[in-house]
Amino acid sequence: MNIQRPKSKQPIPSHAKKVFKGVMFDTYQWEQEMFDGTKAIFEKIKRPDTVVVFPVLPDGKIILTEQEQPGKIPFIGATGGRVDEGEDILSAAKRELLEESGYEAEEYILWDSQHPVGKIDWVVYTFIAKKLKKVADLNLDAGEKIKLLPLTLDELIDVATDKNTYFAEQEIVFKFLEAKFDSGKKKELEELFKP
Image 1: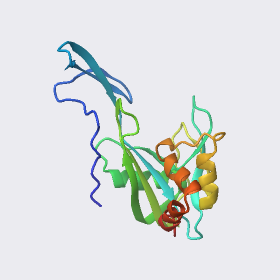
Image 2: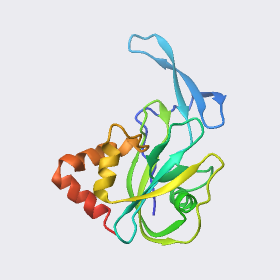
Image 3: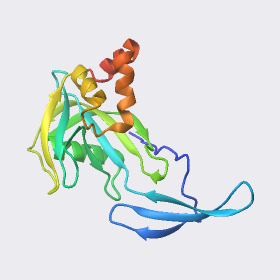
Image 4: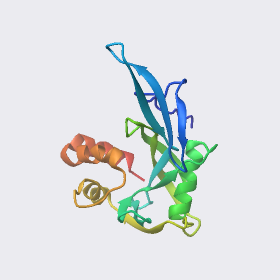
């Protein structure tokens, strides 16, 4: 699978200077000419890309996770996490699925890839994983508590669009909202999430 990184609508220019290197975020600045000829300092941060994986069980249920992480309110979301330095996108998706669910999948479908925030150089790749096989126990980071939550597609749509639930995958909530109110869009999701 040849996965292309989507282009940013405001890329960091080649002459930008890295002014801060953090554990997760680096900050870049550059001088930008304005429309009136004056100059201003522009800034953008960069972080590792992430993968999100919605695994589909043979019975058609989709595995979500109930998660707790230090310093964050509990949330519901898909399996996923950061792409490690030097790791390709699909390998990261496979690793995160295995670590956070104990499953491997034979089929991966890239559903969405986007820069969810304009001032951050960061792409979220969202996959659907099918033909699952349970091969291991969860292998969680020290900062993760995860409980698996298998849901039907209708339940997933309800969770993703419930304003009282902290659903982690905000970048794709609109796809679930479309399915909730448009029968054609719902049929598309039913086909996509079919085991």
